[in-house]
Length: 129
Length: 223
Image (cartoon, rainbow over all chains, first blue to last red; front, side, top):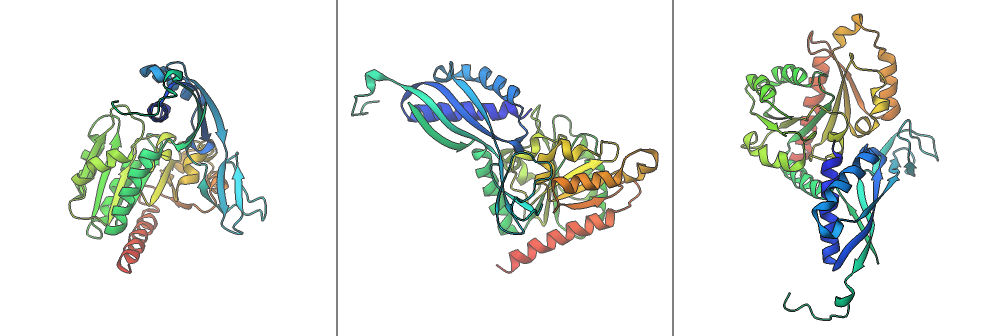
């Protein structure tokens, strides 16, 4: 059940990100999840939709889940190998199964759609905040 | 308005793990993170391992469980510092827990730090603790297809230990199949088959461990 701690991390990260961007609302957040993370989609979304209520800025956020492949380096020929199915991955170039993980092994906040405060968008000076 | 974020959610944990890894690089400490399902025999394996490490290395043990000090009590009989990390519900250890409890076992630099993770084959595999080696344990009373069902940990682990092989005569467990499945997921993994109960395979396991400790120390000395 690591989905709960991951969801908690995601909600705090996007909340901070949105505040720094001076947004007033996050409409959607796209999350890229590596197959290596063994995260259960429904479970993660359930946790996100529960925890988002902690902040006004995320209260109505729609979370979009995308699965991303793992990037390996073939230790035999040096080719970059992109794999979605972890069962018996092999290098597409030389057929070797000796592969080392090089990327796409985590969970990433890819992008988000935010609403800005129109009344403040023309303000040039932050002094006094 | 669209905002590109491109941030790793595991970043906070990974950054702390990098700090720990750097510290252990400097001290020449080999760090093992042992991961398996509950009941695969991690703690018994460690008891028999610690017996054999006595007088050979300066070791410390951090052991994670959701509740109880039971494992720490078992592991503290071998003359090495042991600290129980009670996670109170969290299904895995995270780098900040290691950082917090490390001073209890690592007063003046260790040759070997063994971290026994919470019994769970999924969640612990995604949390970098700064270790050199993730070791996955699988007992012969489990299914031989577990490597296929839990590819994440078998992919990330540097070694796989098949435990309780003394029970093989009483089971239908297919040893050839499990070897194949482990190597299907990770052909470069170091595979060990042993019994903590009758000692079969234990020497090979401990020698492999001591070899890893030696290798890291040599790299450290040559720097």
